[in-house]
Image (cartoon, rainbow, N blue to C red; front, top):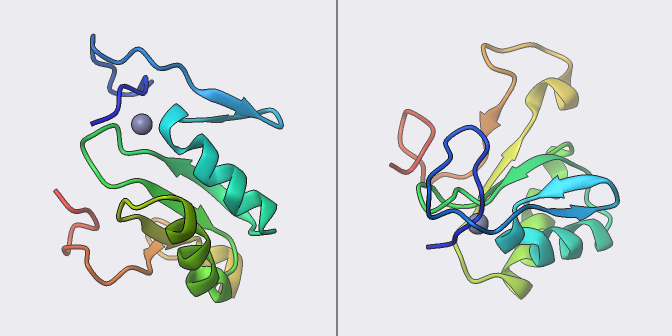
Length: 113
Ligand SMILES: [Zn+2]
């Protein structure tokens, strides 16, 4: 389990401050992975390491980039990631939360826990 500081659910043991990459705050334990994703030209919305409670997750803006994103991540990070896509940005149609899971291994609540 990582020790990345969570701003919405902080715990006393969380000591690793976010890394700033090009002005974007990224959880420390996924900073290298996010550098690889951005270096690969993948457009993202946001990301989270999961802070030991969930798998790391990333929101991408182009649904066609799902497989490519998975390959880029798997080359540098051996954790299971949730790759999500902001469907409203792709099809222009609003759904309840604007986010739809692309991964197939999630439960009906949209998480792994
Ligand atoms: Zn972390």
